[in-house]
Length: 120
Image (cartoon, rainbow, N blue to C red; front, side):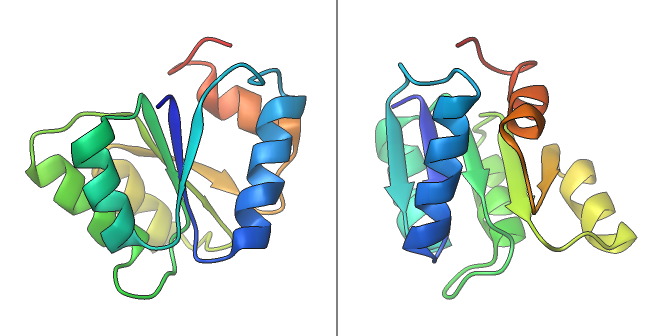
C-alpha cells in the first residue's frame, strides 16, 4: 500500500482520493480506514509509504494515532487533512513529526504537501 487515508467520513475519503488522482498520484495503491484504531492495525500490517489522517475521529483522534504509530518506532510520513487549524493543533502535529493540509484543500495543496515524501 502506498497511501493510507484515515477519516470517519467515507465521502471525505473519496474527495481526498479524487484530489490525489488530480494531483498526479493516480498510479498509487490507496487504502482506507474509517477510524484511528482500524488505521493503526493497517499501518502495522501493511506498512504504507504515507498516512493521511483526519484529526477528529471516533475511537482514536488523529494525533493519538500518530503517537501510537511513532511509539511503535514507525517513521512513516504522516499528514493531517483537517479543518482544525489552531496554532496549538498545528504545533502538536508538527512537534510529533507530521505535516498539515488544511481543508478546504486543492490538488495543488495536496501535491505540495506530498511531493517531499512521495513520487508520483
